[in-house]
Image 1 (cartoon, rainbow, N blue to C red):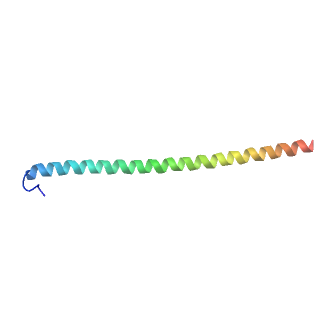
Image 2 (tube, rainbow, N blue to C red):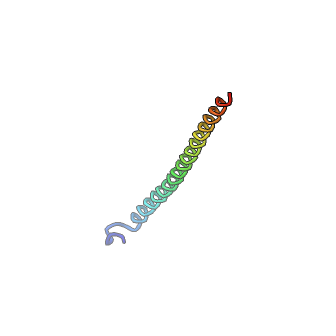
Image 3 (spheres, rainbow, N blue to C red):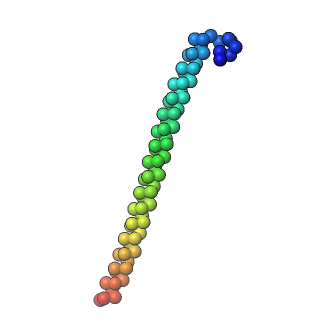
Length: 72
């Protein structure tokens, strides 16, 4: 596929290698970005769970406070 012999084999090979390097670089970057997105999602999930636990703890504290007030 040398464009019907309009470019030399060396020019074709050079361009092919250049594009292959760029493609491999882009694929590596894509992989890193995918890992980053997964990591961010994991952080979001953990923060959501922490917020739920804090909310639950606050509700328990309010309940205990009311119970203590009623006993006084």
